[in-house]
Length: 180
Image 1 (cartoon, rainbow, N blue to C red):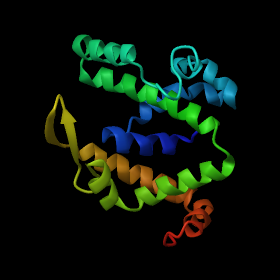
Image 2: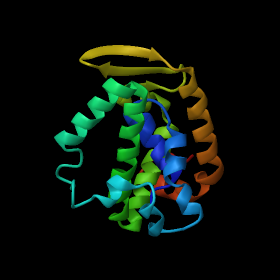
Image 3: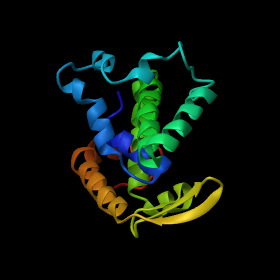
């Protein structure tokens, strides 16, 4: 399974916010049941692989319609949290099929992104330093103030520096990136 910090980095890229509470809730069972078996609890989309979805169509139209309905009845925040939850399971499914070397490569890429906030801003539209998110909502391009994104980014980068910097330094150097 992908580490929590990997999921949180993907949140930054896709949503502009970090949904740590969603990932912690989904993976709480892993503290009691380590390994892949923890996905039997709280990972419905993961378990529905090859039944309701597959890699060529990971988010079918009916799911998109369900999310839209959730937005209309429960609000945009609840709908986005559901998208985060489904994306978590999708990414875990992808991660499980990657060889260890590829996982290390992708972890190195995500660390590199965290150490290059200008790339997050230019590529993903998330300005983690000034707390602004560039999004398209219902066809309208807008910029949202999000000071919590700056705080969460700093926490995430600090956590990654503390726990992953040393082990991933070699991965970054191997693929031609500057040493961190």
